[in-house]
Length: 378
Image 1: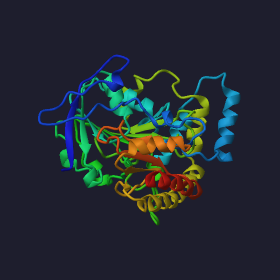
Image 2 (image 1 turned 120 degrees about the horizontal axis):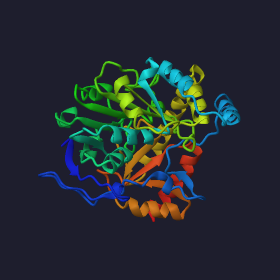
Image 3 (image 1 turned 90 degrees about the vertical axis):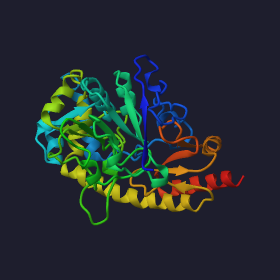
Image 4 (image 1 turned 180 degrees about the vertical axis):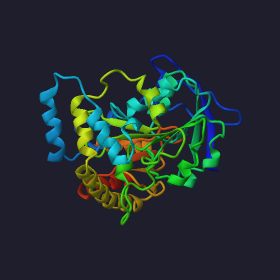
């Protein structure tokens, strides 16, 4: 089985992100996950943070200097044009095909609010929960396509309903760390459908000897209805600055921009976008992705040697997903020993036996594995 399709009722109140599901005929749904829960809630001060996927290294001077300089220009309203042009050049697109946002999360809200005529939105899970939460808060009835853990959470494009007019999927997907083939995602694009690919972690991926980001659709201008969501907060440690962007057809982005507040992206965030999109920024990103791959391989090797621990699939991003019976109790034991990891039961399609673990340097990984091994042997 490659997936399961379930339906979820919309909700409009303050509890929208946690509203209960309505099951499609013939499908079953476990207890409704808390879509509003995110890794930052796990990273309590004083714990070693393996719950949040943001890189923790300090900003390089070529990035920190323009962000700091922008603080001297806060009296003027933000001008997004230079940053938009830089991002467009980075992806080989005209500036009209770029919409800068206050982080990727704002992009999901704009999509949910602007696409009011959508009849059958489908969100592919497990994935980042904000896309579905935004849709439900805007009153949409959402269907979930649940990918199969026994098939390493791989996507079969044929499982997506042909009449779905909005499809949302992550690549690489949070929390599974699965990198779907670009050909499979491109097969989902068609006239009359908006295809949203969340590439918030695309800059963490890499293949030795291959230039650029493998399987990214960011430069594809030939796919109808494609919207690529990007974030600059993960690799560059800018979660507090809030900067991301959307890539897509100019007419579609104009619809989304109409739902965006004026001056939504601050001047320092725009300076960061310009710097990261520069050739210097792109080269640094590729070097970071290569180092991350080595650190990730080390984490996977250490985890795979532990009894009863299964690493899902072939991780491709800044985190790995693991299955271990009783993982919810293991997570609490780790907290008691000073370590924070991300619970899995708030992601649709997972449950209490899953944990997401951020990739860190080998020394941190080794210290973590030592504690985890002691907990598992107890």
